[in-house]
Length: 439
Image (cartoon, rainbow, N blue to C red; front, top):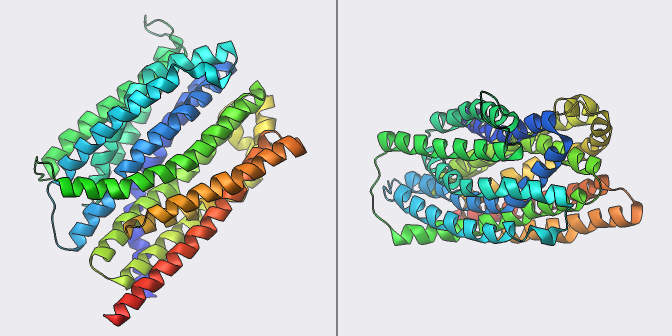
């Protein structure tokens, strides 16, 4: 019990700056939505759709970087300091980011295939053609951030994210509405604000890392292969999950302007609370990865249980808030009464999947620390695309539930994902214990 409580305390305090950083990342999107909500409902809708289209590419890129911290933590646990990890990771990240950008540009120039209304399509295009380039500095920033986490250096990176939230909101106001002699740019102003902020953040964290960490400027092909082998399944797993949400966003975007705008507000609120278990998942990957490197099975279990406990408590609290105070939460984003009424109905379904959603992302971090990413990717695909989405489409087409039906389907899929990952972790830990007994 003492070891468990110690692990609980350690994970909690290690997670705090990560939580601040993850919430800060999410606040970038919410800041855009809030400012856009004061600009026009049409821009809110277009901004949400544009983010939904861009998100799968961004998350694929970030997924590659999530392999860096557990690998670095594992080597630290084994007593090895691989000084080539940072440089090797940055080279791999830069190449992957450029490739993703090229693919995404093809999507941007074929937006007509989505059959949006002409006004929405024009707004989405004008945003994405500017903001797309920001995927490169975003991925480089995250790579360095992940590496620093393995060395318990978490405050600067996450503090930088929070600081640039203020800058980003300020730039949104100035550029979207056109203040101080600057022309009114509308949705393009939001794109320029995001691109500038991400670029400046990448430059600052690189300078910080060079001062704090001794790194060798050489490419280690073995490390690059290891990072790629672990990172690609992480990326694909994230991709298939985010793609479901993006697909749902596109479907709702074709319903009506109220459903689309309400969905985008609710999605941003749900994503903000989701950032907390995402941060705990990152902490779990580092802590479990370190214990796994030391071949300490008890440590693996204690950190896993501690991470899951913290996630359960927080997501239980957030579910209660969504269930009992939906209208008050929607009002934070918009004064439009129609959006408040429609969005409040959607938040009920968000409340239903808070706990399983938080636990599944935490389990993914735990499994990442153990070097297990391929099977979780397959479970993620099955839960979201073979269970969640079909249920959602059925409720939309057969029960006329509109956006609420799709959110109900998402809840079912995420619950199935939690169950599948729980079984996988249980079996993996049993195998670790069996190997220990044999040896």
